[in-house]
Length: 243
Image (cartoon, rainbow, N blue to C red; front, side, top):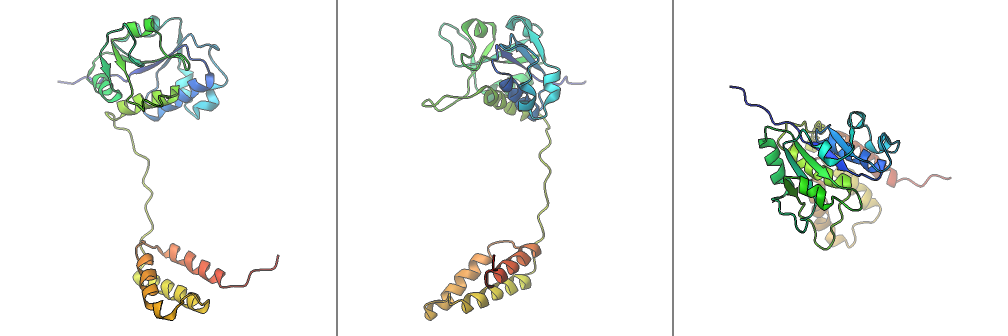
């Protein structure tokens, strides 16, 4: 028996004001694998020339974005609607965290929608009344100031945890150099420090050398690291070039 995979949620922006913010929301979406953007009566119309640069390459999201005259039309094919807002007075809805909402979306066989309001005013009471659930981000009560793209990225990220998104490629580190190379570096440094009169008073020399060696052996120096440090020490010992 084949188990149906839950559909990705659609992102619905209600009355977005700035094309730049729509672009940033698209960028946030695509980072976490969401591509379906729906716009309800964007203030400056659509398409908007300010959206593209702000999307930073998330062109597929903007190119396929759909525009609707009302929120009801935008979510007509959705079975579960999540209004991202603080709790509205007079509206009794289940209130979920982004994490709980993501779990519900993954468990839902139908289409889900995350709905976001305008930058300044958010969703109004009628918008929230149309939704099935409210999603509220736990936030500092003394400074609750998320912008539109930040709100989108929080919900998209929580949803993405249930997906198999690839992590950034790991860059292999240079192998650690043999201790003999590090020892040569230490001796080089000690010689130049001694020549400069660094070890004062003389009776503290042994303790200072131990501290120096301890500090240098804490780091996994590569061959290239050591070569660079030899060059730096040699350069510091030279007289400044005339300019």
